[in-house]
Image (cartoon, helix red, strand yellow):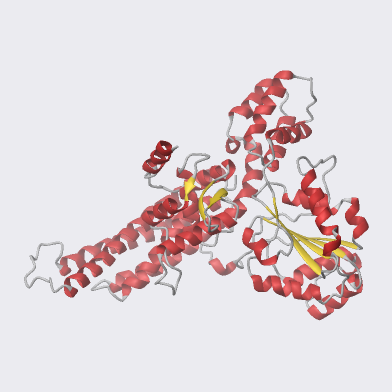
Length: 535
């Protein structure tokens, strides 16, 4: 498993917090401003080295060394965090003393309240932290880590996302989605939609549920071929760039015009030649853009093509926010498959026939339960089972956690980790990782979870928004995790506000993998005991 991205986010979160505190404390420091400035410079340099650790794939042996370095860094960053918290507390304490006119005229010189002793103590601790960071910098060069500025790669680029296409694999069958496909086709071809110039439907669901496969099924239905004059498939994925999407549309329609055109006017003229007066369906697969201005820019371009009324766009996304800024038709929210449907996929992939081996059939049905209703997991496990011809080998798969299976780990993780990587804040990533402390299938109460995040110090105002309340930040973080399909099965109150939710077993496993590199506080026992008592 490519775990580099899991190793670094915790240290990154603490580093950013400490860097912010350093900037705040410099103006308030009494006698150790120089040491604080040096700490800020060291943190910036170490952050760049941490970027390299996150981006660079590691061989197994070297990966352990890098992991050790990151853990040491996390420890030093935590020490710095504690020191700066003490500085902040001392500033607040002295302000309160002055405001309440309670400052003593004579202080015991040996008291910890003595400002001279406090300055000396803090200066020594910060110097020790600076020395530790210098040692880490030296160790980094020895293990091949270099400075890598975070702006070296444009924000939003995810180089490990694979491009999708409209073609099925040989002998691939769509299982458990026949009714959904029929409903979408009916909606797209319904006569009530034919007076609308351009309608948009969003297919939304957690990673691995088969959103792309569903879109392919719709794309290849005979009714779609009959109803629409043109069909276009575009994998958006990495960056939502309007001209790139328009170029891909043109390439799909007319291969002899393939090539990146930079002039938008020329692009629209070429697309108009292909689509003017024609009804088309456009699949935008794997969309991550949550910027409504970018979406409106694309929609505006498409509205200038003079296509026939009744044209449609289908977008696939794992983000409810992406769907909300684009959709005009009823959203298609994918549900999990049943255990029997997962077993059908397993059989198809494993080339298993009924009656050949009753014992393996029984074991296979138990393995189907491990899939959690996620077709991707069923496909991966079925592929593994194809090469395992004995009952003992199937029992081994049944007894193992998915993350412990070497053949299945990387493909499943590569899909799930995209949702984690897409979380913009390292503190938000820590909030997600913290949820691993709940048991599987646990009902997570929104308000209690936000209080726990507050207690852990994960909720900080955005730059320039210091008056923002921690509860508001916690609610925003909760909504982001829910909108990105990392929370599910939500219960809402009469005002449509989410009261509680759950995590899918696979997402919970991802949170546990992420949190392995974090020393999370074990303070959820009371919450869990409370829940058990009430239920």
